[in-house]
Image (cartoon, rainbow, N blue to C red):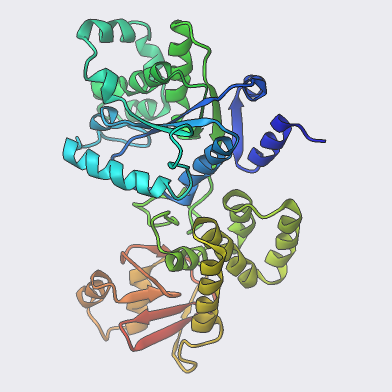
Length: 400
């Protein structure tokens, strides 16, 4: 019979990349006490997608075992901004915007984490300790870390190579995030790989101050729904927790066939035996596999009834050809193309470029039932995909 630790490792296996370290994690889970799980959020923007939620679902499993998530609002550090993935300094966010973003962030996180039991979730803010920290205390903190260690972070090395500026407040961000782990007495944190440097600083400070260092679990990152870079709001290639069930379903239907199985594995809880069946289905009927994936994602965040409703709506609207049967076809190559270019080709000189852009601004362009927010959104068209422009204009894609 599988023990508690092995069951948890088995549950985590589909979404875990690395442990720092696995032996320490086994020791933690084996202890008969409530663990403190650090979940730190920089509330620059109130935005979560299903990639972020991978970490939340792992924390939810731990909550269900009786462990506590410390939901750390980085209201102080948000004013600095983690330079992760940035080639320039982030803008400063005013306090009132931080408060609004925090409230929205919590509402989205409630779709996964349990906020109903104070024994399982505690909300903290790092302004609690940084607003009262003296300059002497802060200097003592940064004196423990060398410049060469901080500057070794990959995004700083990239800026150096590009002769781009690095500001001092950005350089100390990992120090602040790391010290948070000591203050919170964190046992564990679950993060994307882009946060590993910062959280290893957490282990460093905990050890320096005589605490047992936190275990770090990093999770897998997948390409976005366009098959390219990881999910991002700026690229509009994501499935957001804040999206409606219909948008979640429709955005999943944009996914390239070669990512269907990956999304099943990372973003749903279908069994391993079902994964094997879906692997066969992707080869024989990828459209049906994608519909079932979309339903599973909707089911996870909403309910089984809503998932069935969205599947029925999609079938009636597209699969059962409630899109006009005689609508014209636009012949395209099977390659990623900006939405603007597709619509421009369809109108072929009948509308000016500025008129087409206005259609996007007015929300008049839909792709497989989902509004296309930006003319620069990159789509990977498939046979029989449907576009709607306004109320009366439809066309289908035909791949040459």
